[in-house]
Image (cartoon, rainbow, N blue to C red; front, side, top):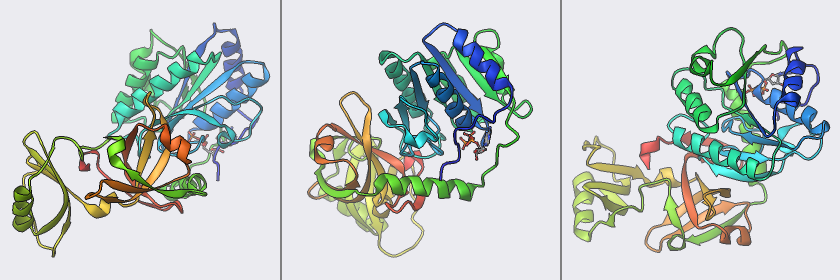
Length: 357
Ligand SMILES: Nc1ncnc2c1ncn2[C@@H]1O[C@H](COP(=O)(O)OP(=O)(O)OP(=O)(O)O)[C@@H](O)[C@H]1O
C-alpha cells in the first residue's frame, strides 16, 4: 500500500547530502523536488531516518497531496517522527492544512499557504531540520507553483531529483540565491500508472475513514468556506420560482452574490439549458453528496476530514461522516468544502472544478 519505504540502498550522492546537512547551520529547511515517481518520498524517509539517528529533531511537511505518506490525502501535513520508521504512514501528524483535493491544479493558493504555515509551525516547535516533500507536478504551471513555494518558504537547501534536466526550468531563477543540490534518481525507482496511484489512495482513504460515525451538524454554528454557497443573500421566493420555471429546475438553495446567482438544483427532465455562466452558477445537488470537507480550527488548521452525505437546506443541517469525535468537532469553527467526491470505502467518484462551488 505504501510506495516508499526506508531503504539504505540509495545512490552514493545521498551520503554527500547527509554530510552537507550535518554541517549546515540549524534550523535548516530542505525542499525536495522531483517529477512523478522520482523517489522524493523515499529520499524524505531516508534523510529523516538517518538524521533522526544522528540525534536531530526532524520535521516532515508532506505536501504531496495526491500521493501522501502521512494520512490522509488531500491535506498538507506536519509530523515529527520520533523513532526510526519504515513508511511515512507511521508518522502521527501534529497539524494539517486543508487543500481538499488530490491535485495541486487550481489550488496553488492553498498549497503555498499550507506549506508556509506548516513550515512556520515546525520552526515554532523547534525542529532542527524541516524536510518538505512536494508533488510531482514540475512542468507547465508546476514550474510556477514550485517557484511560489520556494519564494515563500525560502528553503536553505533544495534537493533536485532529476533524470536529465527536467527541473532546470524551476531551478534557473534560484541559481544564485538558493543552495541547490542535483541528485540522481535511484535505478530502483519504479513508475506507477494512474490506476495504481488511485488504488494506493483508495487504501489510504479507506483506512482514514474506517471507524467513522455520521453526525448531523447545524451549519449555522460554523463558518462555511471553500465555496460561494453561503455568500451574499438568499434569493426571494419570487426569484426562485422564476428560475425554476425558466430552467425547469427544482431549486434547493439559492443565493445572490453581488449581481450573480448561485443555485443548488436538480434538473426536471433533460434538455439543453443555456445561460450565461457569468450571471449564474448552478450546481447539481448530486455533486454535494460524498463531497470531501474539512473541519477547520480557529487558527485555520484542519482538524480532520469528513464526507458530506447530504445537506438539508431548509434546516441548514449537514449529514457528515467523519472519524473525528464529538470533542474534536467542537474545536472546529469552520467547515471548508473540498473538490473531490469520495466514498468511505475509498472509491473516488470524481473531481469538481474549483469554480463549481
Ligand atoms: N532508493 C530506492 N530503492 C528502492 N526503491 C526505490 C528507491 N527510490 C525509489 N524507489 C521506489 O520507486 C517508487 C517511487 O518512489 P517514491 O514513491 O519515493 O517517489 P515519489 O517521487 O515520492 O513519487 P510521487 O510522484 O508519487 O510523489 C517507489 O515504489 C519506491 O519504492
